[in-house]
Image 1 (cartoon, helix red, strand yellow):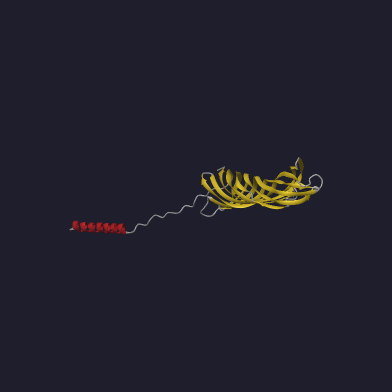
Image 2 (cartoon, rainbow, N blue to C red):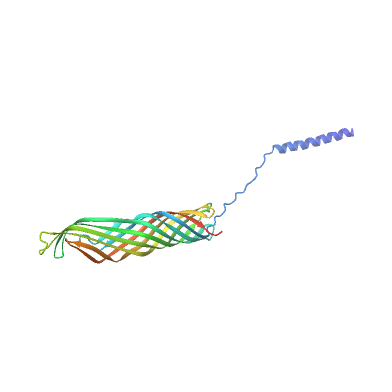
Amino acid sequence: MRDLKLKLLTGAALSCVFAQGAYAADLPTKAPVYTAQPSPLYNWTGFYAGGNVGYSWGRSEVTADSFTFGVFATGDENVSPKGIIGGLQAGYNWQSSRNWVWGLETDFQWSGQKDSVTRGGNFDVLTGGGEAVGTGSVTVESRLSWLGTVRGRIGYVAEGWPNILWYGTGGLAYGRVKTSASASATGTFTDNSNCEGGCPFSSALSSSGAKIQLGWALGAGVEAALANKWTWKIEYLYVDLGTASGTVPLSGTVCAPGCTAFAGTATYSNRMTDSIVRVGLNYRFGP
């Protein structure tokens, strides 16, 4: 009898254990909790250097002295120099916090930027004791030979995008502005002494001057990390080089019908402004 009670108690206990196990197996399993890890910070601090290429277009307001039989009157010519531009840049960035980057950059650009305008017309003027009648033309050319800047930069790194830098930039600009003019005229010259009825004549002259100008640059851009320490950027700059002016040699010939060379001087001014869009590639040194 005692053995029978023991068996019954043991069986009841085992039933409870298996029932609890089956109930536990039926309970829903809680999924593991994963904590999102913050994106690693890209370190913008350090020296960098690279190259760039782009396109530039500008406005050049040229004023020159009148010359040659009064055909080419003093006045403004609006020329639009444009062309490919490219060069090198180097600088330093300091990331003061997660979001703000301060920097200094210098660059030097070689420029194929130039444009010219030609005017022509008829003339009938009194000169040299007689009357000159004919046609003539003048060509004015403006060229930006090279350009450099030294600029500060201030950049912002948005939350969640640590490898993209949005920045504004501004500072000193300098460049070589070249201004050229050439003219030609043909016609007849009549006076009361030895050219009654008109003597044929022709004339040609040219003048050129170049100056290194100081001005300012202002712009904005975006720079992004590629891989390792390489970054790429796209940038816009507005450049104002002020007004280049001076007195330059003037030379030419007059043939009526014998040819005589002559030389003199001419004064000019050239106000140059420029817009540049360029893409660049940089390599950052350091850790």
